[in-house]
Amino acid sequence: VGFLAGIGSLVGRASCGWVCPFGLFQEIVHKIPSRKFRIPKPLTYMRYVITVVFVFALPLLLVDSFGYGQTWFCKWICPDGTLIAGIPLSILNAGIRSQLAFMFKWKTAVLALFLVWMVFSMRPFCRTTCPLGAIWGLFNKASLFRLTVDARTCTFCRKCVKACPLDIEVHKRPNSPDCIRCLKCIDACAAGSLGY
Image (cartoon, rainbow, N blue to C red):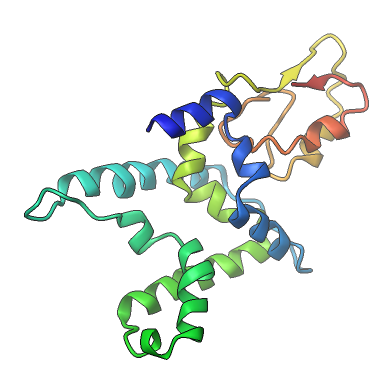
């Protein structure tokens, strides 16, 4: 909790935009030519429900005889571990392949679902499911590193909105919990009204 609060207090959700390898992977997959779709705003709130239920409630409430809970989110939802560890290890190790059961099939199906979604929508896992993004996004308005808008020079041309990969109205909500601090909006602002 201290680590998450420390990172969030310093940079908000910038880690999602600049450090996360799964975020980069999603952006690369999204470059596959196809028709692109926006993610409906109500779906972006799902990450908070998932965080509360799978990261906090289930591990605290469903414990074993020693009082320990399981990592429910990692076990049932997160496709990243399947991509970077589960699939490569099962390919390289025959012993592991012989032990694969329902959980591996389930996690592979979750990964496949997100892979397809990544082609059509930008960063669907980050925007609808990731608990780190949910937690760090809450710090965006109060972090030391945050975006600023100069209302005196803003022409409301909406170039920042068009440049934003996450469909944020940057000129209205520069420190939205959805913002991953990619800074593409600043580059797109011809008036120089956006900064940090």
